[in-house]
Figure 1 (cartoon, rainbow, N blue to C red):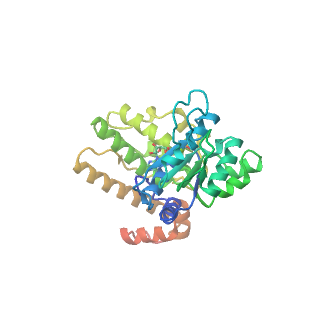
Figure 2: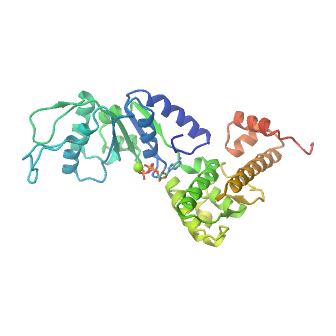
Figure 3: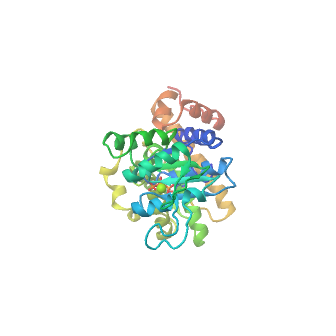
Length: 334
Ligand SMILES: Nc1ncnc2c1ncn2[C@@H]1O[C@H](COP(=O)(O)OP(=O)(O)OP(=O)(O)O)[C@@H](O)[C@H]1O
Ligand SMILES: [Mg+2]
């Protein structure tokens, strides 16, 4: 969906929320760990919204010093401060009729939080140094990697502002909770790098794939993206175990969640096709990889679909549909 890859049930659930809220003008608060795609989600919401033909204006509240941020957001008039030679519109005004994306809202200073609360309540802005206020029609999407409820509890974030922002909360799930998206994401990043650099196909074997699946990915999709690009450049035709960073091989960084797929079947996993033929090949291999994952989970649970679904971190219905669609059958009777 809009360049956001996610087949995992938690992602599918999130896409439904995104589609629903996008059609409205409601304020959205996107929370999630760093690198989980919060900015992509904000862009997707804007693209589906009735405001899609108007601008989406981003502001990184964490990167701009407090005084500058105020004039960035609300604008300033000539002479408002030393160096203010002209009237300058703020991002709220630039986003009029469109969407304002307040990134890293958790880093906003207490003083600006008060001003922001007022703007959200009244949709009126006051440029720095101006005595006149101005009405704006702006949809606000805010994002943060911080746990805002915790920030509120610890007195760093205003509770009233939190409630104003949290009209429609969306949580972007960490990568370690959606192991089944890893293969698709690698394919996506490998293909993109390959296209940029015109390189030969790279193969990921079961051992490498298994290390990918068991790693906790603290930097989430961004970390996977960077590593995929690096491996794509480093590898001749096969990703070698030796090319993986130490942290992927180190048992300390493994999670014990059930997303770990246990025995990874012995199948070469071609992730970066170069020609159309190879790309068909790739799909076939993914299909067979998926079949083997499902069959091995079913075998291990004695064909108990509930348990197998749990093991694969899939919805039971998704698993049942897949079994039916693929026509998978039990070969050995108990
Ligand atoms: N589901 C996804 N599918 C494809 N690419 C993704 C996905 N999630 C994240 N990415 C890519 O990972 C990188 C990080 O995503 P993004 O900047 O949206 O994360 P973020 O949650 O805003 O992180 P931060 O909190 O550090 O700002 C981007 O290059 C983005 O394109
Ligand atoms: Mg971001």
